[in-house]
Image (cartoon, rainbow over all chains, first blue to last red; front, side, top):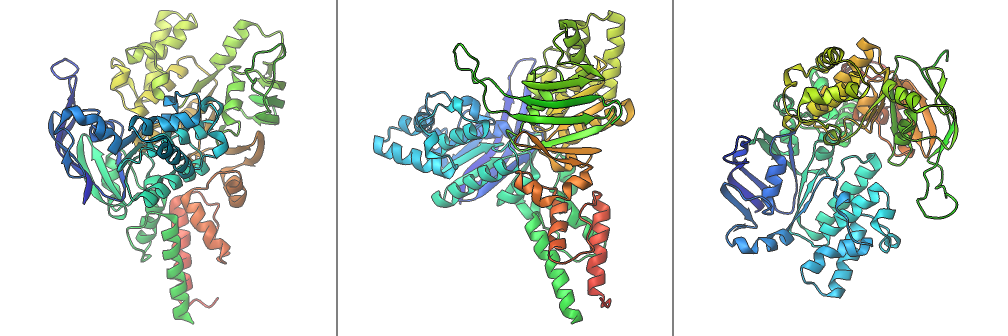
Length: 289
Length: 299
């Protein structure tokens, strides 16, 4: 089952003006339910436009957007409801905090959904836990926090609405390796606990390799590749031609294969590479014995 | 070091708490007694976790921030001297250019070549000279073909290269890149890294490159790791990345290939040299080990 399905989407900015530019031309993409779906593409490939289609911030010129099988534009007046079910976290969301305490900021979404005070408290608490935000920080002003902590507050604010689809645009941009691990760990923990669907947009091949179950690759407003993470990273040449790449470890495994080492082609994390190399070494050593 | 281009002598820095009151309250120091020398024409990568103080360090070098304690020398001149005039400060900012993270925050004009001319115009340079500098700068970053374009039509990597051209047009001796590749896609990163490397190798510009990307740091001559306001590692990329455990404790990673080789070495494959930085050489080394260990070689 697909949580989100976009069918033949066409979208042009500034239509009928000299600045007219087509961002998406007949894109069809689908994102699987209860999975962490990756969406990658070079700058200007149409990722951001596509993301804004997902919860109706932009309306396609042509084509349909199905959220859990239902056309989101069927009743345009109810589009606000769609935004509770498909939550969008933009790049650098820490700039969007506005309440005087972190707690209120996280509670803003659930409050707009009309939930009870008790339910809101529960949601705020659980969202803060997922993103690893210490409860002592909840009473503080967001402006007293570090950049990484603010990012977590913003993320928790969207998670607290418990949307069935959570879309994150570059959630770890600008964070150091530990910060990245914690943010992605939180997202994955949330996805597993709630059984929701997550869509991650990223420029970091290493990060999508580590955290995404499948990948959709956009190029010049079209879907270039779609498949499991391992399958997609087997297309090193096409990815490089599209302004992207593969994780260093995938490239390294290819070099090893070219040296005549019998490793599987679809390795994209250090963990897998280590396991395979060890197996090769152990197995062969076993043969000698 | 003889005649270092940059010299920090026991430099500390604390931000002000921002609380109103008769006395300025300082927050805990973000940089603590830093001593550092950077050679002219060198390419140094600076790594550190978020909040380690690396961006603060960069901002001290051209007096965007002023140290709380200690002295800073640029090209032998004490820029923290109280006799520094406003003109002296502008001269330092011309000598040491900075390129920041977000390309959209750095471009001011509506046409690429006008944006590049902005710096030299402010220096009061003659129009013919500006024309020449703008053309040369755009040529250096490989953006001549776009000089009449509007910046918003460019990709992230192209915008950053225009920002770099704007700095080059002021004929700096040193450029500090503060996470200038962080927001770019892999192609944009490569374009900018190639440009940085060329500026260093061909134009002799001293480069300080602040980054979270370990593969980028591998391209520098020297890597400095800052952790909690002090320099915790300093050496060639090979030397620094051989301290895998130490890097992990300060919240950093090593490149994936280094990690793989390090893990293999730590389970007993002593012949592995995980400080090798060339991917192809690493692959040949590991392939040879796998083949030998499997070929019945008596060991």
